Length: 295
Image 1: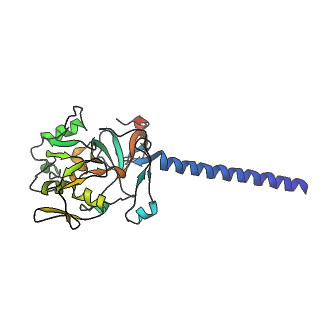
Image 2: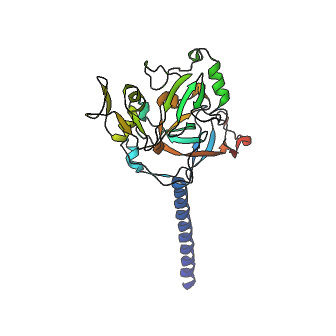
Image 3: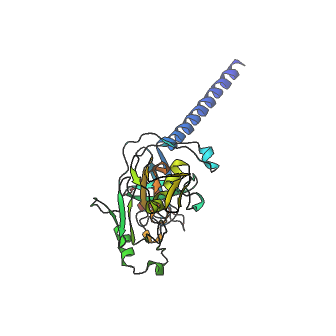
């Protein structure tokens, strides 16, 4: 009888050890997912040729800093406060980043976090940059480095009428007074935290969603005056940082050219490496792409 109880005690001890190790492993995995790294599967060809449909990429959250917010509130589609733990360094131009799409349900008149919708694009413009597109090529004032996929920009530039190839040509902010297109765009000053801009009917077109989102008030144009709530404003100091992003496959990419600037809070992290890849049609691994570094 004594040996039987000893045996049961040993079995129970081993079960508890296994349970403890399993719980610790799950907790460690969740902590790594929240604070360090996550995975994202490429769902389209908007980042061709660097990333292909079926690639699974490792997203580093430590560079920009992991986000903390109430996931349950966000899942209900309600406004949520997002806090970011300080990261190791700032994002750079040409970094490939994963982010939450900033216009919930593809509504172009307000910014709202959609935790179920992720995009992956290349960072073209940083907070404080002045960006423009000339004959299809990205330009940032004072910057000489190549931005984005040059071959894709050359293709856009070579088209007299991109619409004939099924490529939408009209661009953010969709106003005839500016007449911006995917070939001729800007200059667009990208706001940064603490930057003050003059507010007039033209800057209203560029920043109305951003200011309304920051202030939780409607910014509107009335008889040539810009009103925030019921108050006329002539200048505004931004509280947040914003980015301009683009797909490498510019002929088939819904990016900042079409919907505007990306709030920093919506950035998940930097995509650093393809950890797995499979053909979407045959579901066979593409061994030559596994563990490739993303450039």
